[in-house]
Length: 329
Image 1 (tube, rainbow, N blue to C red):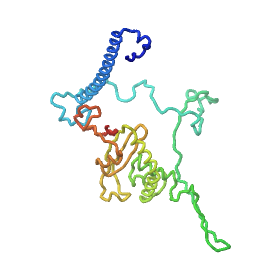
Image 2 (cartoon, rainbow, N blue to C red; image 1 turned 120 degrees about the horizontal axis):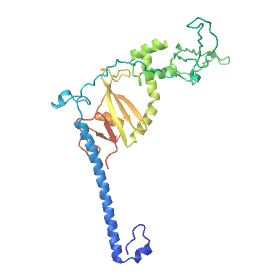
Image 3 (tube, helix red, strand yellow; image 1 turned 135 degrees about the vertical axis):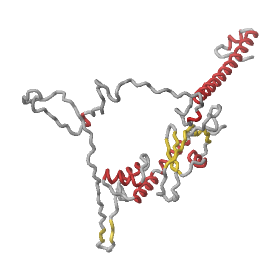
Image 4 (cartoon, rainbow, N blue to C red; image 1 turned 45 degrees about the vertical axis):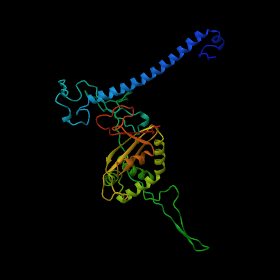
C-alpha cells in the first residue's frame, strides 16, 4: 500500500482506483524533479549573472578608472571629452543664499553678548529697546589649554615604638607614571589612529598643550598601553576569527624601532581584518603568508586573484584584498 501524497486523506486515497493512485504518484515525482531542476537552473543563472558582471567590469576597465597603465588601453580607446563650461564664474553666483555652519541650540551656548545700535544709521536719532528676534552670530572657540600638575607627597614617618620608618603609598587611582591617564591616552591616540612620529607627537604636545615630553617617555607610554590592550585585542581577534567571512588587507606603513625589534629601520606593514562584529588592526614587519595565517588563525585563505569564491574565472589583475573563509568540507 502506497503512502498518500500530502493533502490527501488516507481514507480518500484508498478509495481511488489503483491506476489513479499510480498516475498521481508519478505526477508527484515528476513535479519534484522539475522543482529540483528549477533550483539548479536558478543557481546556474545567478553564477552566470555574476560572471557577466565581472566580465563587463573587466571590459570597461581602463587607465582612467583603474590602476592599468595608459599603454594597455589599446589604439581604439577614446577618452571621454572634457565637459563644456557653463560660462559662469567659479564660486557662488549672484543671488545665491550661501551656506555656513548651522547654529547650535541655545542650550550649548556658554555666553550670550547683546549688541544694540546706538543711533539710527539714516538720521542719527538715539535708539532704545529690544529686538524680539535679533540676528544670531556664533563664534566657536576652544579655551586656553593649560596642563594640570598634581604633586603627590609621600610622607615617611618614624614609629615611636620600634623606630621603623614607614612611607605612604600612592592611592590605587594615581598613575605610577609621571603622566596621567588622559595624557597617556592622547599619546596613544596620536601614535595609532593619527599615526604621528615621535618628533611630531612631541611638537604637538608642546605647542598645543604646553607639555614637554621625551621620546623615551612616549615609547614607555605606548608600551604600557599596548600591554593594557593586549587582552581586549586578543578577544577582538578571537571574535573576528570565528566569523564565516572576513576581509583582510595590508598596506605599507613606516615602523620605528621603539621596541628594539627593528634595528635596521625596515619598512613595516599594517594589517587589517574586517568582520561584522570586530575590526582588528595589527602592525608587523612582514606581509608573508605566514603573517597572514598568524592573524587569521587556522582558517583557510583564499586570494581573490588566484581563485574565485563562486567557481568563476579569476580576474585579469589580482585583487589587493584577500577574503578569509571557512575551509572547504
